[in-house]
Image (cartoon, rainbow, N blue to C red; front, side, top):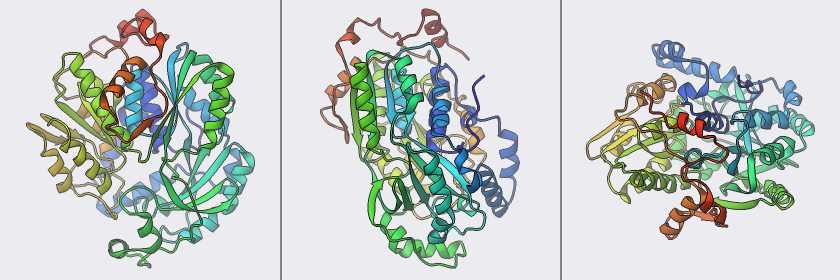
Length: 493
């Protein structure tokens, strides 16, 4: 039985959900209800409530994950790392281990290679019941002492206090966001790498280079107003007609936000990579004889096109038509059933205009799909930059045969919280079943990258392939026994 996560970590967050999804996949399991206890009946009941009541339920549910600020010294960086490493199978060695920025496309890349990922960034929700989403200065002051205590107890962490009153309007009514980034590997990550990475293996150092205007509060302590999504940094700092209309729609006492003046640029709180960790990775690699392959990209979704093309080519090599696209959103993902249904994964960070535009560019530049299915994460707010249902229907209409949502009640979007329980059930209904394949080797990944001639906005600063790839039996995962491989490739209904 897997150890439950520390009580101060958020369940509905990118690093937490993506680690769970990948860990379950590497154990040969699927990912229902975001890897949490079954929530179908509760979300079904919540969906039957009026809109305002659903907003209250969402705020209360997310606020229930928060810890009081006076308890932040209970947060232990090594405990976070130990929970993550405990998600992955024991007794197995891997040709590579990824570490760094969150990305749903990265989850699918790791699933194809059969390797784990160790996140740098985690979310710790802090209770702030007396705050107002549109009062950023007050939010910072109310959390300042808790932030200092958190850092005093964890010298290996950097704190990014993130305040996004656009997408996180409902959650900010009862809590605030402390995102912490590891500055070094720490004992637990080093132990995991030493025990599970093959001699001479590869560390994929995954670096999203996206930055954001921030206010430096103290050493290792930044305040970030806003976040990647529909509104721009300029709109968070100085307002716009869209912001004014949004605040009026929600009855705010403001018509623009008034955050602390930014004085620096720092790695974006949720997705950005803090480069201090790279120095520690290099030191470990030198001591142990590992190879480090830095992977650089500017936006979280920049990996999505690359991974979709990798899967499509992989399916065709296996004799599939590769005509089925699955569009995922934020933490709604399913690596197991993606492969079982022969779906090409394309991951979007959110259901906002930049994500829709990126998906549109991908569809413009690739051979049309017969089928397109789409999951949309519902965050409950008609915010700046939200793409309405008609916009998503238009993208689904690009399919040659059929385009449909997966697990979504279109009339309740973006307040359809039942989608968290339905996405997995409906995805399993997709016709056709394929056996799980053997994992791709790093050599196969390198061959794919060599064939793309710099097509993607992703830089691989070293070659991931290596000479020993040629001697590994085809289709066999590192450290995987023949019995494990037979079980993983068994076709199940």
